[in-house]
Length: 88
Image 1 (cartoon, one colour):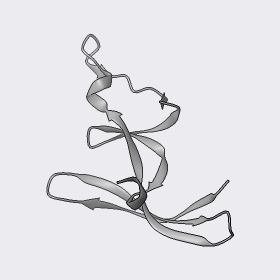
Image 2 (cartoon, rainbow, N blue to C red):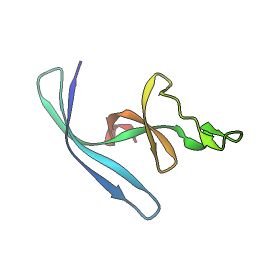
Image 3 (cartoon, rainbow, N blue to C red):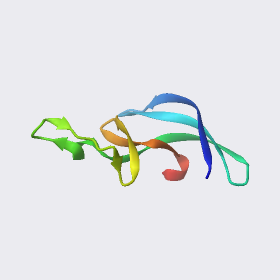
Image 4 (tube, rainbow, N blue to C red):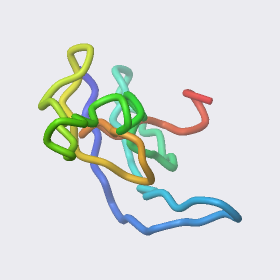
């Protein structure tokens, strides 16, 4: 199992949205290190979990086996941080 450590975080933005970026270091199986910019993975749109009867969101704790961190910019995002360059 590889070990990931978050060294720093910041909020980044573009013309239409904002997102959290994380500076991460990961220990690889061969004992080398990888430094990368990570982001929380988008799991679903928050609107998929809107209950019209209660007029509230019912966000699950887990989606497709991944733990949910919360909602960011109308998207449900995971607790885990992934290497942005490898997942785009």
